[in-house]
Amino acid sequence: MTRCCFAIVLAAVLLLTGCERQQSEEFKPQLMLHCMLLAGTPDLAVSVNRTYRIDEPFDTAFPGANAVVWRGQDTWQLACQHHDYYYRRLDSGQAIAPHDTFHIRVAKEGFDTVYGRTVVPDTFTILYPAWNETVTLTDSMGWTRSRGARGYYMSLERRQGNQDFFLDVAIPNDSFGPEYDSTRVNIQQMLFLYGGGHSQQLTVYAADSNYYDWVSGGGFGAGGGGGRASHLVGGVGVFGSGCVRSVDVYYQPDTSRPRH
View 1 (cartoon, rainbow, N blue to C red):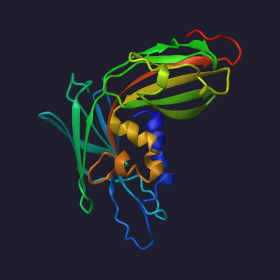
View 2: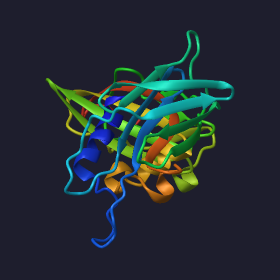
View 3: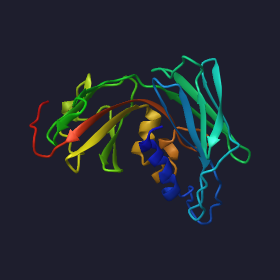
View 4: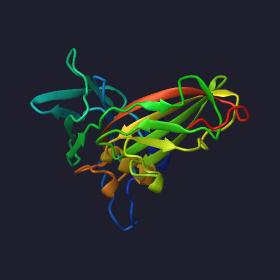
């Protein structure tokens, strides 16, 4: 996964409450997953951990889980690479494709078994701005719509010296009311840009319903993404899929006029 998704996983360390509802209710740990399969890649990567009490330290090491992913008749056993990161590369020449249906089963002694399913959204293209274009807040950003996507998860990365700054936002696929265009998403003004005089990377994920509902519902910051936002059976977190595109721009506050 990318750094923006890695940051979401790290948020579990600080924000996850372990689903404690009342002091009188006995706490029962659950398996917790984080996965976004990306179209065009051969990588099956899942973070597998568990929920924790609010006063319990988060442990990044979580070996011993049995994680299996399958697509049709093909089945892959994921191996723990390090900490709580489980991984398997598809066979040579294979890649995750749009409209593929993937399933997951994760089991570990002492926990309920977790099941999930995702259908990979279609590809899409960022129409504007162009790569390395100089933009202002009044410029527009647009991309073609992805069939099968529930919505879009946009991550902005600004590079300044040796530091990176991030801003994330969820955009529903049916957004913008009367401005709706069935062929493209158009953001009339890039008010999410900030700073100025620096290179910024705009990354857009076309997300399936699992990942979009999870991230727009608060992710791990909402107590593990439980309830409707999880779409998992037997655990919490997310098993989703998407397609990613990005463009680098140079933000200059006072130069260009609107072009789209």
